[in-house]
Image 1 (tube, each protein chain N blue to C red):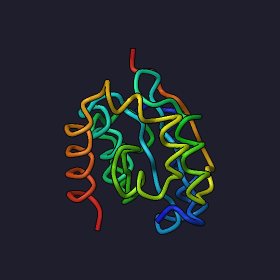
Image 2 (image 1 turned 30 degrees about the horizontal axis):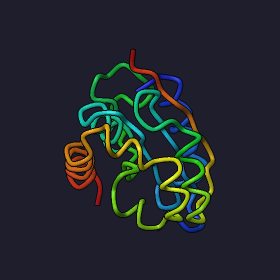
Image 3 (image 1 turned 90 degrees about the vertical axis):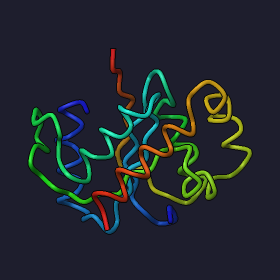
Image 4 (image 1 turned 180 degrees about the vertical axis):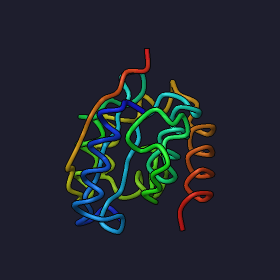
Length: 41
Length: 106
C-alpha cells in the first residue's frame, strides 16, 4: 500500500514525531512529500 | 489540525490527487488522531481552517495500524516506534482512526 505512494506525515510531539514515521515510510518504499510534527499544547 | 498544515495538504491534494496520497498519523491519543483523519477525509470539523467544508477524501492511517506497520522494515519499526506502543493507548487510537476512515472514505 505504501510502495510508490506519496505520503503526508503528521507526527505528534507527544506521540510519534514526524522523523520517526519518515524512517518507517521510507523503509516500506513510500515517498514522504510532507512531514511535520504537531504540538497540541 | 494546524491551519498551515491544512493548507499544505490541500495544495498537495491539488497536485497529486487522492489516489496517490496517503496520510500517516503519529497522534498521541485517539480523539486528536480521529480529528486529523476526519479533517483530511471530510473537511475540518471545527470549521477553522482551509479544509473547512472541503472533502478531500484522503485516507489516513495511524502509524500503529497493521496496514502501515505490516509494510515497514521490522528493525526500523522497533527502533523508532515500538517504545511508543507501550506508552500510548494503541487499541483506542487504532479503533478510532479506522472507524473515521471507514466512515468518510470509500
